[in-house]
Image (tube, rainbow, N blue to C red; front, side, top):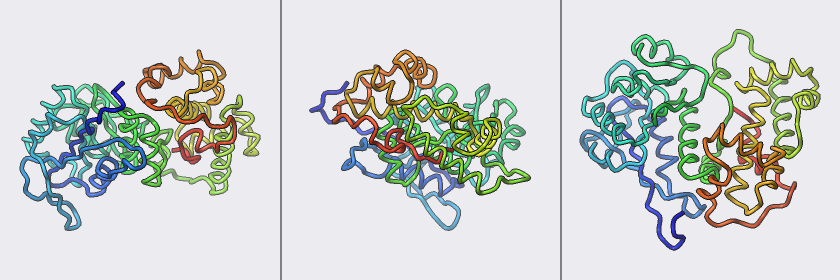
Length: 349
C-alpha cells in the first residue's frame, strides 16, 4: 500500500476521439473521469482527449470536441476508452487503429462503449476474442467481423484486458466497473451517487430487448419491492421460496418473472448484492472477516472467500489490503438500509 503521506499519482484515462464518435458516450466518460470529486473522497483522475491531431473533432448535432493530446499520449495512459459510433461501418482513422494495437501490446487496459466495439474489431484487437455491443448491433458485428466471438448475454465483458459493453446505459455500467476494479467499490459508489445512478446493476441486456408481450407494470412494482426487502435483510439466509412468498407468487412464477425483468436469477442477484455489501464493509470498517461474512449473508468466512475468488479473482483479505487505507468507524449491525449495506440501488439491472 502507498504511504499515506505521499500524494497519489492521478489515474490517467485517455478518451480516443475521431469524427463520428457519439456525444453521449463522450459525456459519460467525461462525467466519470473528468469531474473532480476529491472533496467526496473520490480518486484523482487525469482525463485527456486524445486524437491524431488537436484539430476539433465533429460530432452529431453540431457539437465539437477539442483534443488536448495527440495519440502519442496513449503510451502514458492507465486506461484507454473508446466512445460508441454514429456510423458503425466507417473505419476509424488508420493512425487510431495502429495506436490502439500498440497500446494493447504494451498491456494498457482498453475499453469500448457500445458500438466502439467496431473500432476494436477494425483494429484486429477482437480477433478470436469475446466481445459485446448493443443488442441491435450484434448481428451487424457478427456479419462484418466474423472473427469476433460476439456474445449477447452481458452488459459488459472482458477478454485479454479488452473491455466491451452493451448499449448506451451499459457504457455507464462499464465505466463504473472499471473505477471499481482500479479503486474499489466505495470509489465507484461515490461517483455513482454523484451521477444519481446505481453503482452496479446485475443481469444482462436481455432485459432490454423488445418482447412481444410486455409484463404488467404491477409485476415490476412488486419485484422492486421484493428486491428492497431482500437488500434490507442480506444478513438473513434468504431463499427463493421466501422472496416468492413476499411477492405473493409461487417460487416458479417468481423466478420466471424475476429473470425476465432483471436478466438474472434471484440467487445470482442475491450473490451480487452480498459481494457488494462485503466489499463496502472491507473498505470502510475494520470488522473481522467472520463478522463481515455474517453481515453480508455468506454465513461463513470460507463461503465468502470462495465467492470472492470465483467472482472477483481475489480474496477478501487481499481486497481489504488494496482498498482499505484508513478504516472508518464500524457501523451498527442492522441499522443500515439495504441500499447503504450493498452500495447499490434496490432496482437491479
